Length: 137
Image 1 (cartoon, rainbow, N blue to C red):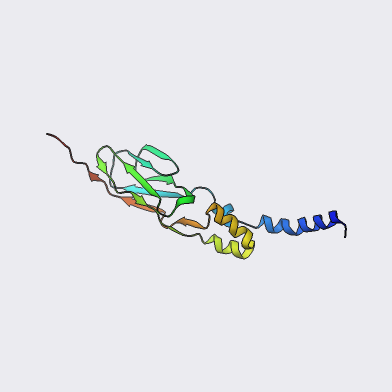
Image 2 (image 1 turned 180 degrees about the vertical axis):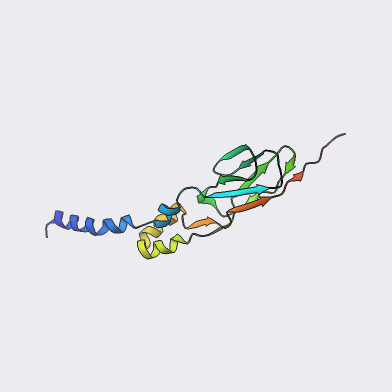
């Protein structure tokens, strides 16, 4: 068999496998979105690793950094209220298992690099604001 025919045959066999790899990256790639709601009716500023959302009303949807899900902190600030940080936890993305079956190790490796094997454990958070104390002399 000629070298060029061998390369063409190899390409034709590998191409379908490459197209079916990294299902989780294709289906759930990008930045995950979570919803934050709370008991405060004034505008707040929400700070994630991905972006700052200034002067937004709760409830609000924000994007988080997929590459640092575990332990990622989301800060919420307000003029009159203090909030505890939201600390994200991750869970396994169910699409990953289909990818292991369909795409094998190459697809799973792509998903690991893009961290699409993980999702935020919760998609909804409720925060309670604690009224700031006035420091008057």
